[in-house]
Structure formats: C-alpha cells, structure tokens
Image (cartoon, rainbow, N blue to C red; front, side):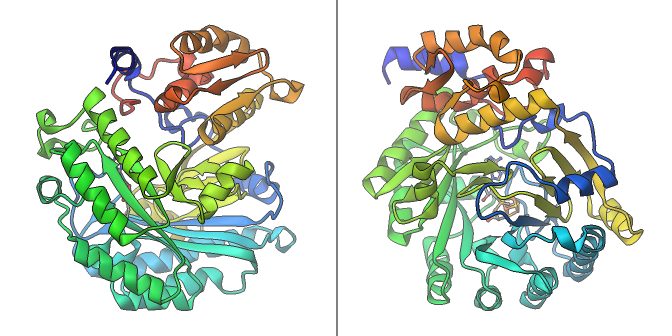
Length: 456
Ligand SMILES: C[S@@+](CC[C@H](N)C(=O)[O-])C[C@H]1O[C@@H](n2cnc3c(N)ncnc32)[C@H](O)[C@@H]1O
Ligand code: SF4
C-alpha cells in the first residue's frame, strides 16, 4: 500500500455510522405518535415513478449464534415460538390494514422478508405468513418479492413454497468459505451445501441470487479471501454484499468470543476488501455504492447507471419505494418524512400488537434540515456526488460543513465545486467519512466512542 494511502486510512478510520438512514438511529429524538405515523404513511413524499408501498418483515429466530452477528436475533431451538410469532405479525399487518384508508391503498411494489433467519420457519408457516400478507393486496407491475436465507436451514420445501407465491429474489448468508474462519465464528457451511440451495433456487425460477460476504472476520487473510471469492465465482450469484465486519462488542458481547488480536483491522482490513473487489472485477462484478457488487445484467447495476439506486435499512435497492412498512420485532418503517421502529423483543412486541396497539418503540419525525441533509447523504451513498444549487437543497448547516468537506478535499477524498461535491475514486473508501461531514446531528452532539463501528 502506498504510504499516502496508508496515512489516509489511519487518519479516517474513526467510529462512524453506516448511514442506512439519516438521521442515524442514535440521533432519533421525536417518535411519531400512532396517528402521525399512519398519516405520514398515507401521504409519503419522495416517491418516484412507479409508486407503490414496500413491506419489510423481520423474523428474528436463528438455530445457533454466529459470533460476529450484529443483527436482531433470537437464538432458540424451541420451534414452538415460531407459529404464534407468525400470527402476531399477521395481526400487526391487520392493524395497518384497518387504519390505512383504502383510498391510500398503494399497490405493493416490494416485499422483503429478513432476519434473523426467515427459513427458520417451517415451510407451512412461511407460506402462511406470506399468504396472509398478500391476501387482498394489489401487487404493482414488476413487484419484487425477496427473502434472506441461511443455507444451513433452507430446504427445497421452503424454496418451493416461496417460488409458488411469486418470490424471485433470494439472498444467501455466505460470509466466508475458509474452514478456520468459519470455525472461529461458529458458522460452518461448505460450498456443496450452498451449491445445492443455489441450484434448487435457480431451478425453481429464482432469477436474482444475492450472496452476503463479510471482510474483517478473525483469521481472514489475503489468501483465504482469494479462495472464498474463487468459490463465489464458481457458484455464480447475480449480486453480492461484501460487508465490512462491524465490531461492536460493547453492544453485541458474543463478539468477544474471538480475540481482537485475530481481527484484521485498519490497512489489513482494507487490503482484504481491495483484494476481493479486484477479484470480483475480474469475474464481471461492478462496485455499486458502498460494499455492494452486481453483474451487468442485474437491476442494481442498471439502477446505479440510471440514477435510481436507493439505500435503506436492508442495504441497497434498485429504486426508492415509499412508504416502507416494517412488520415484526425491530423492523423500521420509513415514509421519507419519518421513521418508526418496532419493539425489539418478541414478548413486548406481541403484547402490544395483541392489545390492538401499533408496537412502535422509537422513531423520528424529520425536520426541514434533516430532510435536506437526508437527500445529500443518500446522494453521496448512491451516486458518490451531491449538489445543492437549488434553494430546496440548501440549509444553513451546509455552510458549516464546508471546512470539513474542504479538509476531505485536501486529502483527495472529494472535489468541491461551488454548489456540491464529488467523491474521487480513491475517496470511495471513505464514503462514511464524507457523510459524517454532512451530518449536522453528529456535528452538534458527540456520540461518544462506543456507539458506531469504525468507518474503514
Ligand atoms: C440477517 S443476516 C442474513 C440471513 C441469515 N441469518 C444468515 O446469516 O445467513 C444479514 C447479514 O448481515 C451480515 N452481518 C451480520 N452481522 C454482521 C456484522 N457484525 N458486520 C457485518 N455484517 C454483518 C451478514 O453478512 C448476514 O448475512
Ligand atoms: S448471521 Fe444470520 S444466522 Fe447467524 S446469528 Fe446472525 S442472523 Fe442468525
């Protein structure tokens, strides 16, 4: 690595948000009341052409704990919890149906089921969940139904139920194929197991296959990353997420089960990413936004070129769809003007839903400055550039952020124009840092150093 680049990595490898939302969750202050939340869902702004609603359903259960995991999970082998959970999610959806007027009943453009591990549910429960959500719902043209799966618990019967109900996108948690890495994080799965799920999914008509990989896990080396990506090349997904390992053991204490000395950090971690990125380029994958890659035939790559790429709590999507209604524990809904997150644990979530209440735990109603900065941060994350020429894209904080942006420009991370900025190719490693410069709430209140994972 050249010394100047090493220095940049050292200087900018500070704790920072991943900007799946703005304001970021720790800065949410104004939880919307249920009526305000429903009103903002019924009148979403920021919708583009092909307007429709999106639904995200969170299924928290997993059979065993992967010790790197940062998701909201409930580890249990007690399968009797799952059928009642499906009932409660459907009851929550009914609360929305009863309260959102039919006049605002937008067609459903996206349904995404994530977790935890949705295929922890027995196929019949998964089918019941999806049928219950879709019954009586008008699907938009080209609606996309997608699901996250763990190959270790995904059976052909799951895929058959999903294909029958119209699912065409599937995401598989891969993380890494190296046996030593897998053992250290309690996530052992071989290439053959993954191949079986991919082949069955393709045979049943799934045309969008995503893999989740992580760099920065214990014991990963350049050579292990090469082997993992060679296996990925053989398995042939359409797109993939190559996530930076988020190490936050003060929030997720099981991340202490491996020693920090075994973790590649700073330059070593970035080198793993760049090794992976270059191998992916050789196999025909293009970098999209931050940590995501897609083949030219995939809608994510087309969206990156057409300027429709969007980022939300699930990562990158090919188009913005509002409102997003979140169902299930910890799910986050988004109407562009406000966010609402559900209770995080199954018991309080279930109690509130069964009492006929929307189970909102916290949220945020965006003020004008939030809305303007949200647009700029989204632009940086999706288009590597933003402009503030028009009055509606201006807010006084942008003046305040200029010295921080100028410092990033001095480091070659971005170019400042009179009315905006463009991230340079080298600056793409520092996308989170550029967003941090535009983050008014972070500038005004130090979050302390034990909230976010490191930015590089
Ligand atoms: C909900 S999980 C995916 C589905 C399924 N539970 C599985 O693991 O196969 C979503 C993804 O988040 C990523 N992830 C989880 N914890 C992470 C962490 N601490 N840092 C970075 N990525 C993480 C993993 O790549 C994982 O596949
Ligand atoms: S990575 Fe997936 S399977 Fe592993 S604990 Fe997290 S959510 Fe569950």
